[in-house]
Amino acid sequence: MRIQKKSSFAIAIAIALGIALNGIVLISSAQESDELNEHITAVRNIGPKGKGHKAASAAWKEIVKNDAASITTVLAGMDEANVLAINWLRAAVDTLAENTLNAGNELPVADIEEFLLDTSHHPRARRTAYEWLLKVDDTAYERLITKFADDPSMELRRDAITHLISKAEQDLKDGKKDEAVEQFKAALNSARDGKQIEAITKSLRDNSVEVNLPRHFGFLMDWNVIGPFENTNTSGYDVAFPPEKQVDLEGRYEGKSKISTAWIPVSTEDDYGILDLNTVYEGLKEEKNHKGAIAYAYTTFESDSDQDVDVRLCCPTGNKLWVNGELVIAHHVYHATTTTLDQFVGKATLKKGTNHILIKVAQNEQEDSWAQRWQFQLRICDQYGTAILATDRE
View 1 (cartoon, rainbow, N blue to C red):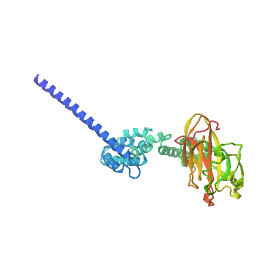
View 2 (cartoon, one colour; view 1 turned 180 degrees about the vertical axis):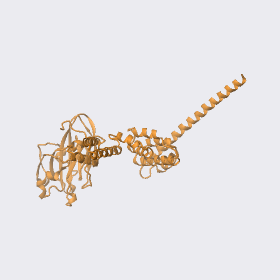
View 3 (cartoon, rainbow, N blue to C red; view 1 turned 30 degrees about the vertical axis):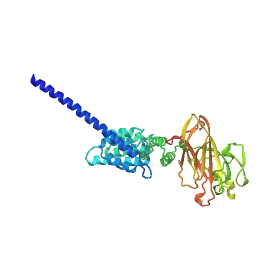
View 4 (cartoon, helix red, strand yellow; view 1 turned 120 degrees about the vertical axis):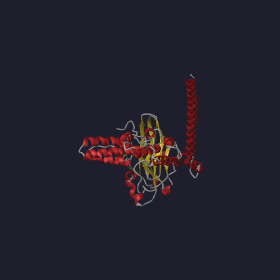
C-alpha cells in the first residue's frame, strides 16, 4: 500500500509539473508572438525620407532571428502595408526561408500554400509565398498554376495565362486545333495583360476565330466631338469652354480662329478604341488649327446599377475627364510616352441608368513628327481590368 501511495504521489507531482511547464511554454509562445508582431509593426511604420528607419532596421534584425514557423506571420504583415515596408518584409521572409534551408530544415509548405490560396492577402505577399513553394516543392507548379487563371493578383494570373497559352500552342503543334482554340478562348476570357491579349488574339484570328477586342476590354467606341478651341501656348487647358458648362449637342460655338464649331458624331473601329482627332479635323490640317487646340468628346454610358468603376484613359497630351460632372482625371502633359492601355486610372461612381462622360483633349504647337498624336482611348472596367459593358451595347 505504501508503494502504491508513493507512486500515486509521484504521478500527481509529474502531472502538476507538466501543467506548469506547459503553461510556461504557452506564455513563452504568446510572448514570442507578441514580440514578432511588434517588430513587424515597427517595419510597417517605415516611411519616406528616413522616417522610422532606425526602429525598422532594429526590428528587422529581430524578425529574422525567428524560425520558419513565423514566415506566414511576416507575409501577412505585408497586407495594407506601404511599398517600403513590403520590400523590407519580403527581404525578411527571404532571409528566414534561406536560413531555414541552409540549416538543413524544411519550410512549413502546407502553411505557406494555405496563405497563398487566401486571396484576401496582399498580391506581393502571395507572390512571395508562391515563389518559395516553387523552390522547395517540385509538384507545386502543376498543382497550383491552373488555380490562378482568374486570380485577383495580376502577376499570378499572368503566369496562369502563360501556361494556358503554352498548352494551346502545344495542342496546335499536335494537330488538335479544336482543343487549341478552346484553350485560347479560355485564356482570352481571363487575360488582363495587354501583350498576352494581343498574342492570344493573333492566334485565334490566325485560326479563323473572330475576336471583338473593344468589347473584351470595354473600350467606348461612339462619341460626339466638338472643336477646335484655342490652346495657343497651352492657354486653353484651364479655360472652361462652353462644353464644360453644358453639353448641348445642337449647340454651335465660336472656336479657334473664330471658326464655328459644332458637335460631330464619330465612331472608331480601332481594336484598342483609339479615336484620332487629327482624322476628325483633317480638313483643317493645312491651317494647322489642329495644333495649339482643344477638343471635347462626349458620350453616355447606360449602367444596370449604381456601381463604382475604374475609368481608364490613354491620352498622350493634356486631358481632363468628367463623369456625371465630377472631375476624375486631369493631367496637363504633352506627348508623354504611352502604351495602348490604362495610362491614367480614375475612380468613378456610375448611377443606374444614363451616365454622362466628357473628355477634354489638349494639343500644343510642337511640329516634331513624334508630337503629332492628338488622340485618346477610354474604357470602363472593374479594379482588376475586367470590362464593364453598357446595357445597350450589342
